Length: 273
Image 1: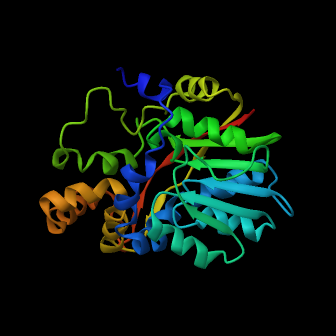
Image 2 (image 1 turned 120 degrees about the horizontal axis):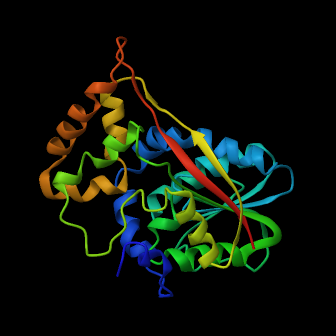
């Protein structure tokens, strides 16, 4: 299978939880306290673009520790979230006590048809066990006049964060044949084709700058090590090895006052059913 074929397959077996649940929940509080905030600018831009507000029903598919949901609730929306990691869901529940958060597969959403005004997948649909099925599910639960949002990485050229994404590659086993990389949907045509293949109609592409800003190098390392992609290298090589890899990769981004600032941007596709 080609890397692009991975996104086009019609396998409907839900299996995101077994792939991602343990890895993304391993350092849940560091993710919630540090790393999830690096994409907050994207959440706020999307909510403003679709005028999310009072009385709207919002679902974050792959909601992590619920930062996006909490921001949506502040705007008056009724919020729900699904994630594979139980530890992250517990944080989301604590953040937004009136929200509805469940552990599960985003390929099999436990919600009725045509219910939500906005369904988002912030770097989640493409990492599902079955990406196309997950995106179809997002369309199923979205209202006919609602929006579905797919967020992926921006194109890696001249984006400093791409070097951090690649830093662990030497510690990872070779990927299976045809496995997509993190930037597989970054081209405009690819993300549009992904939406179309799932039965959605692309409406608009938003490119959002969201620099990673940490107060110091150790905080940055804790944030980076909280990502699910770091768990296997930590398990196989030890936390200190992974710590040291990130410490070296962060050196070019350290400011005179000790802060770490890294350029990053994300590509978002708004679609309708």
